[in-house]
Image (tube, rainbow, N blue to C red; front, side, top):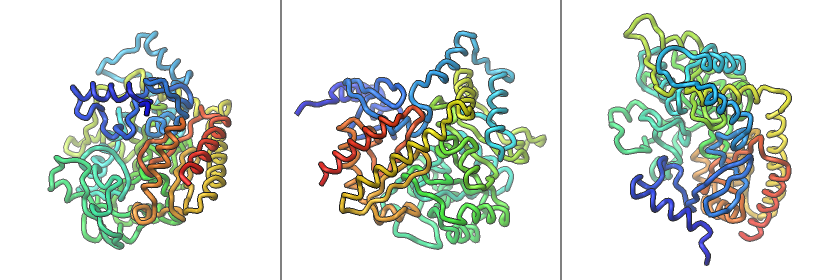
Length: 442
């Protein structure tokens, strides 16, 4: 059998001589290993000459599509204008971006800019601890909020590592990394999404500084909040004096210009953004109410929260962010109308094709983000997925799609992402390929 990815295998082997695992971010390592060479619009191309319709989108970052010409032009302008990294003083670009951001997300008063989403969540939790004078944090089972000690846990954990469903209650800290001190783990409490009783259980036992969560769980597909859940968290935060933090790194500008918070009508105390905010350029944002954001400049040194970063608001990245926000806001492009229409087409098409499976399935979707679950209902939390989803079928389904030129990340329950660059023809071809895959599987 001919290896269609020989060059990809060689590159991974070569890189592994100098990079542990051969990949600089090990969550990018997958089976099959594919080394992508370039991306244009809705398509990506690997070093072996294979082309794919892409629904990975840089873990959902390339919302406008790969190498969007308007974004590239803005970035190029910073080079031709000789914009530079000085490391001293304010810049016009960061001020322009901040103004556009606050106009786009009316629930926030001010922002700070980081280079990654993980840095943004790190700083948001630090603010919460400074404000409340408490140390403990609640996170969601199956959520993903970054790589740091407060949140590097319980990410697509195996059932044997987290145990059976407990409610009300909390789950063991399933570390996503070695090197996290046990004393630190004791400050982090994991509960299931959509479970207010478990939040109350933890609140009675520990001094909670904040709850941080994706308002829709999008690390395990698309798990939506049940009626009253986010409202309940808001009410508990107000009653108990902790901060409610929405991690909108994934949900943010993908679902609406004002973030998912503008859809659900809940104002968090702090929010974090990334990915789509600069169409894949490395940017994170901490945003929120002025009384909390001003802890970065608190007049009392002992109360002040440090934020620093040599590459924060790097000129090229900030220009990409400005161009992205302008394009998302422009009626001329109608970005959200386009992607939502394609999302409708994808959902309806998948439902029609998969209904012929003779097996349980559920297509979950929010706007341009979607996930096919091989279970008979919309999941309510990660334990629900563990108990009912057919992970083996999901893996085989994804591998067959990839072999036929439709790229989803080859790990079960990972989100599919439609971009503005996708066309009606892309969706129709994807559905035709999906039909072929289902026929091959059965």
